Image (cartoon, rainbow, N blue to C red; front, side):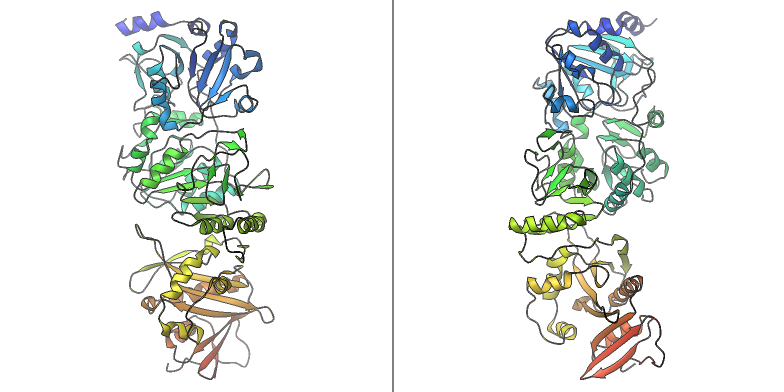
Length: 629
């Protein structure tokens, strides 16, 4: 036997004998998530009479937490750094504590003994031929606990995958070993429900090829990953992940090609999932695990290539404040790494911090978008840190927006059943105009289309939103008097808010408006350069159409794309056709209609051409060519 093998044999003991070495009154750290040393935890409780006033600390764990049982109250008190389902009742009933703390700060606080660890109970792989064990699925704060503790007890399990990175420990650092061959704790993924799938699709629209992602575990993260299966060269720098990453890697979408730190590898601090995941991780050089103060460091996060951080929340108020760890005064989960990644992504060039959540809770009876946070609810992520809030109803872009703009954007992605009362509250709080219209309709995301123009430029053709008022105002004041006259058949000097709402009050059926928006460029907010709309005459089911295109964007083919979209919408909603009034000298607009593919019936009065364009030809009428054609 080698030297380390002899020492290993000498350090082997039983779980009960091992835990009896922990003095009374000391702090006991327990390994995280699926790395929970179940045999040692069970021994703690079996030997409860040996202990007195011992504090058990840990992050989220998957297994049992019997030390929170009221019968163990004189022996143990739990302190949660993140509240899981197994300790939530104890925390809410006051039988356990909760420490709100950024995950990136926990290792340093342990070393400083602000969060003291006297004994560390961990799970690891058997020693390799060099005398090193591996922490497997959880390096996170486990490594700092091992470094801080005066007593380290390891449950050695051959099922623990060996994962490359910082999780290797020399056997000498461990004071005693117990052996176990228990199957690893699993968290088998659930198929994302319909709401999660819609949220995933919305989030995916914010993620471009080559981005670096942070995501988590659950239906929404899994739905996002599914929606990204067709992308290219994505990277992953995340505190945690689950099974969905396997599919993303095997599809070729996740390569890490552009990652600035650990390129071509998945960088994380812990994971939990199914046995399939653990087998995939074992000795896989595509993965590297590191402590939380490394992975969750906002400065390192900001150095990633186009970092996209995706986190969830329990509630968001109309100013953008995010509550993620409590429901009112009842603590529910924890801060975790949300703020670390949100801030890191916000500092990253072209980074995108995202809060993704269902629009409602409790079976649809409660809106997660709220006028104010519930009494007692804490702010985990401040309104200044939030850039995007995503629900199944769309994306609220809050970056650089005023309280009025934020409130309206958040109401627009709330469940339609709650929008009226949210708008009423926003008016009472003087967040929005007293006459602000309600965004009643659900935004038709599937109607968006990027198109290439005649000059090679790019625009996004999409339905208008209530939140487009500032961009629509900018469009109007950028127009020449000549263009304004052709559109309105008179000179208009201003369009006040009250009139602007007329153009924004759409239901995407009887009232419809389509905009052309510049494609996003680095460091620039997209601008609306054209708008086309129709209003339906309920008596005839014909839609009255009008267009306006910014002067320098005219002649590029935008009008042809806008009319194509309007025709698609009008036909889909069962309308009979289109009508339009166009000035005789507006040849460009007349040509757009005549080249639309519709039959055009024209009559002229006082220099204005009245055009009628039925979707089905009407007997006895013939098309009239545009003047000068």
